[in-house]
Image (cartoon, rainbow, N blue to C red; front, side, top):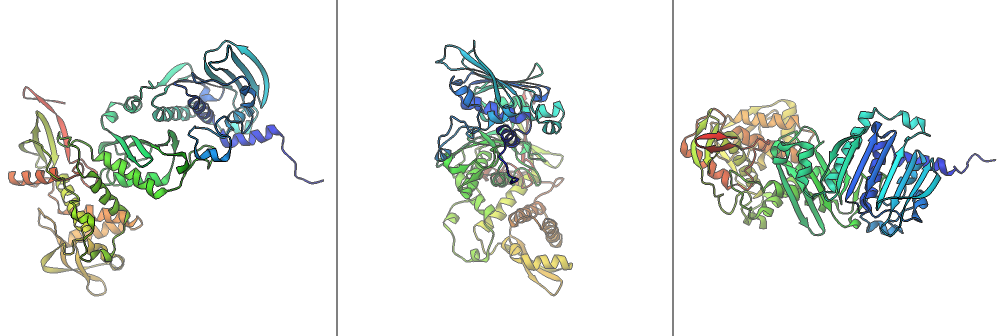
Length: 572
């Protein structure tokens, strides 16, 4: 007799449950998503003991038909698809038909449901895969599903659950994310009899953000609404003040389903670059809407992993959506809509995604070179009154009874940073400022090896250098930009070289970004350096002319509003 046998149905369902239901939060996810698929506008989630002993999800959706109640507990029983081709046109949260069967296999489940056409509701009780009872009951239109004693017949799995508080935290985070992606659905979460979270369902994402994160975060959000072809990106991103050390505040949805996708995350990182600071991550809550045949969510039962058919296009769309929103902020009280914004964004995107090459240095200007890349068509209309410089660092100006501080170093750093990139992107061939006397710099073996491998990078950004012996280089010129201070050529060259070697394992584009930022930082006016009034006005005019004047390349804001003046006093 052979050793291979067919498993019984309960064992099969228990194994399947291991893929779908790992903890109480998975039960909540499946039940709430079913409620949303049923058209519910009000959903109440109640849990006890972290969901281990009691979970109840009640909704006002369309309900379950009487004849569908028993079959709804079978594996692969679903009302959402009929054949494999339907996967390319389904927008429901679930479609596998595994959730209820998996939950029933490892718990006691009570379902009370009623459709608008039914005269009475139906109550069905099932445990460990078997239906125990079914009867008519009084009920409102909608469905209530109660799950008790989760994993009662799989003690090994129950043993791996964490403490009640931890399991509830997973549930809370899940419910809050569902609320953020379903703004027109009112969702309430009750834990051990206490109301923990509630969304209004009024369609305003900032109201939910206020509830979850507080007023400060809400006040520093920028709305996103970008459409290209059949793809639309909506939601909010945080300004530079919202940048964090971790990615915990980066939430992404695909057709309202929470997903994780490294490609889209990388695109967001590039869009925030230069505005969040090195090593910081931007804040975003975004939903991407697109036709179902653009992606495959049928990768894993959790549906968190997604494959896209055209990653390159979506990468670019994500970048444009975030970058465009960041460029829509008001600046020194001016909130004019940016003209030719897309041209600037496209050139930034090209710079970040294309590596430099020597072929671009020939005198053949591209079509994009005919357009001003970094500057606006006209300077921002800001009528400011210059008051002076505070602590020899912050330029103070009054605008319409509001007081602003302008960081002179950050502002000048942004101006120079944009100018250096402009020189490179426009393929300006002679973008070096020749020195009166060339300087020879001795290097270590590691430094010399790096220069030999990356000499084109230095040359492309304005350093006129050449190899001079076995362990030294000769510097004939430095980037042709405005220097407010006397530059120590050797120091700026070595600072940049050290920065690049330290981050040698990062991508070429990250190295280039750091390279430009370092040059701009070293060349810019510093704190505690005196500026004359004419120099202040010239700096502000150049800053107001930029399409992107908001932060220095390292993410520090160039301007801060202190408050407004009333009767000669400053009000925050």
